[in-house]
Structure formats: C-alpha cells, structure tokens
Length: 369
Image 1 (cartoon, helix red, strand yellow):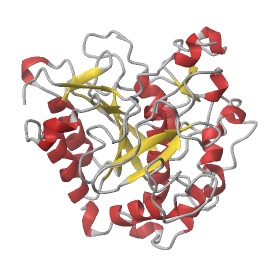
Image 2: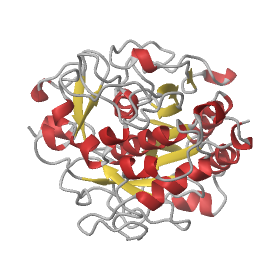
Image 3: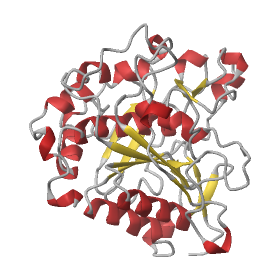
C-alpha cells in the first residue's frame, strides 16, 4: 500500500457547535463534576447506574488518535504510558509518548484525541469538568494522526503496539472517506485489517467510528472484520444526520451518542480538550463540545472497559455490548436494524449480563496472555 494513502479523523464535524453558536469504590458523579449535567451522553448509555457494579478499574483503553494532552488535570490521574507513530521519519516509530504535540513540539490542530480520551475515562468527582463513561479505567494515548490525518501503516503500528502493551480496548475515532472499503476489499491495503485481526486474536476489542458522510455502510476501518462499528445518535436518540448507517458484513455494529452538529453547544458532546483550546463561544477553555461518530465511539469503548474490568474475555465483552444494546423507541434488545445496528449501547444492562469473573481472575484467561 502506498504511503500516500491516508485516513482522517471520523469527526469531521469537530467545532461545528462552536461555529453555530461498589465495589469499585467511586461515589456517583454530580456536584464534583461541574459539567456533568450537560453530559447527556452518559445518561443515554446509562453509564452512571453501572458504576455501582464496575467503574472500569484495571481496564486499559488505547486511544489511537491525534494524541492526548498529558497535562490535562481531568485526565492525568488515569493515564498510562503511550507512544507516537506519526512524524517519526525514516527510522519509524515509536518516537514519542502519545502527547498531542507531535515530534515537532507543536499543536497542529490535534485536540481531537484529548476529547475522545475524556469521554472514555475523565476522572470523576474531582471538582472539575466532566466524568468519563469508565471513570476509573486507564487511558493509553497513541498518536497516529497529525493535523487530522495519517497513514494506514502508522495506524496499524499503533494498533499492534497498543495490544502488545496491554490494551484491553482500542478506540479508533478515525476513518477513510466513503468508498475506501474498496482498498481492503481488493487487497490494495491490508495493514490495518491485519492489525485488527491481531488485536482480536489476543483478546483486545477494537471499536471504530462509522464515519460522518451519511452513507449506508460503515467506512474502513470500522468496516473491517472483527471491528465494532459505531454510529451516532443525537440527544433524542435519533440517528445523527451526518452518521454513516452502521451496516457491515459481520453485523458487529451499534450506536451511541455523538451529538447533533447543527444547533447549540449543549446538543453536542462535552469533553476535555488540550488546556486553553476550548471554544470561547461555548464558554469553556479546557473543555469543548464536539459532534461526530468520533464522539459516539468512546462511549462504546468506555462501556467495553467497564466490562473488561469485570474479568470478561473479549468474546464475552462484545457479546454483552451487542446483545444488551436497545433499539430506540421500542426498547427491543437482540434486534438488528439498519439505522442503529444492534441498538444504543446500555452500560447498566451490559454489566448485569452473566459472564463476569472474580477480580483475581482478570487477565487470567488465554485470550490476554
């Protein structure tokens, strides 16, 4: 595959809102997270009710994206070591620690990964900002995109590095343009397809944004076998106008909150951004409101982290995600639809599904050895 072939962030709608005007030992988020009331996405996936059972402690989510602000006070407590695979030159990667500033030390418009990371696992009840879907999970920052794009090879390298360094879940809020599935279907590109298969064989779940061009199928790499494709819903649980329909041959597809991308800031997904880069029009400096399937994907990755923290295998995690998801309006579970896949993920129902193992059994099965 030629190095000129590139993938971009699935959240091409970033910034639209600004332009348009238990046992786990964590108290429920509330006054300790000042923006919690605006996190309607947490309510839609029923995350907070799941925290009585699991908050994700012990699970690791690799955010394979534009890198993360390693100094953000709402993320620092949940970060593990990361890596950088873009801008590394002829020597190849890794050549950095996953910071959103690449090897040149500059922020080239790479706030995206920090927003994704906060949705997955921002620290809860710490007196600032937001709470993540899995507020005690760990975030592994893996930078594979610079200025919103990157090569298939760098993305594949980031996937493999994440697996080899202990990621339970890989979140990829990125994708090619509509129609780029032909590259993998014809064999012109195979590196990311093979990396996703590598992850699955080693017990790591790969969760990928469907895309934002409103076509009938998941874009690649969400299209690839084994990846869970995530479409976007708005706060009324309707399919977001921009979202791809979550359709792919293996039917591994769900929906999650990704925002409206047309109206007020509060109709989109609020999360962390690199310190000082928040849009003034939305009244924040270290947080911002984005829309896209990129924002839907980390909601699902966060629920997956809650499930991995229960000691489940990859197969059991993905079964729980898909079979407990609910169709909007009807509330039906175990039913596939072209608009929502198996439905909107439901953390409370998922963590209650049989398949959890005692904490001391976690990572003890053959899939994670």
